Image 1: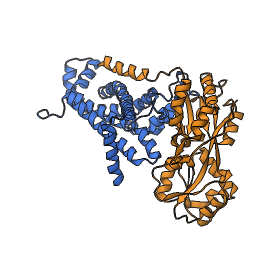
Image 2 (image 1 turned 30 degrees about the vertical axis):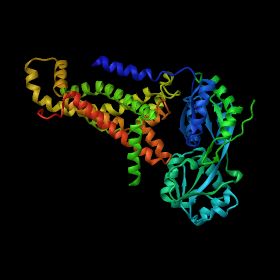
Image 3 (image 1 turned 90 degrees about the vertical axis):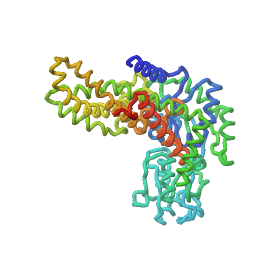
Image 4 (image 1 turned 120 degrees about the vertical axis):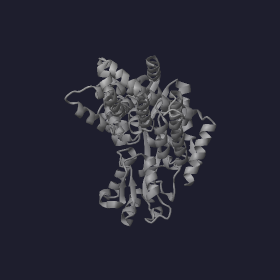
Length: 268
Length: 234
């Protein structure tokens, strides 16, 4: 009986021994939900021999994981937070890889008339004026930070919206589920919206404002802070992501006929 | 309602085609929870018997605390294990965070109080019955504990199965310490949370039905192996 228990234990422990070239990378939900990871990771495994393990979290938590040294690299989309992260010495640098855009989703009958707004700020203004329900990520993710910046540019304090402002404190998909249930407006990244399966009455109502531009950057965790990080492999990964093969894969990746990401890295 | 039917169809499709991803995460679910229950039983069963047999001043307090710990919130356990195993935490040098080992550690903490509590309840009743006999035979403490554990084995099996039930359906702790990494730490419950997040309710429900079926299958296998709950045996 005991020997069997030990066998089970040894078996469980052996499964956790790290392989030589494995990178742990914290990425945002929008990157994973888009399905792009399923295209890129097998290629990376094949060409570089690096197994990339993804931890799918919000930008805020992703940066915390990098700060603690629990991941080797971070791929996020919140430029001010990235710059602060590098300035604090947690990462050696940031490098933009690609961008996609945010879109405003809402009830298809559009009571706030977003469709005729000219800018994202004006669209948010209309939601506030109409008193229509709005779902916020509320989880300090890149999307949440973007939403708050947009409210600021519209000169609206979201807290003043009262019960119409629903801060759910969860990921993009869970927030979209809530918006679908409440038939509310919500800011989403295009990738998650296109691959989302539970749309209900929701529709894409506003997009295209340059203010909704959403660049993704990779940040290698500083090896001087955390000696155990696999810095060499991260640099190899970064160069591959910035290179022509990744550019091809990213630019040609479509969901329902729509291009999701535009490669924007400059090769060194 | 329609989505539940779709979920059942999705579950059937996954099982019939032996979907490799499903086999992978199901196997890992079993690996993590069974290992955790074996370790938790090795700690919890003797602890429960010892508490039933021993008399000491703080015994009542220890038992009350143990009973209260049965309701440990998995999210809190996950967070504490996370902070301990994080690279910037006290056990960070082992690099255990985001591995199945971390998930097993979290589940051992969640399951042990449950197994110990149920074991204690069962053995306490048996001890009341055996007390005079075992004392008159001049047995040592160790012999008493061993006798009680053996004679209460049916009830202790129930304790272990309850622990298994709590572990296999648990998502809060293993999501935090495992990170739900594809092909590394993804299990049935975290996969269900992920698919729900993507709005794929049919697939999420399908995985949920697979999880329930798995729990039933494990219980049936254990009962048939241990020859309990059969006709003619009371």
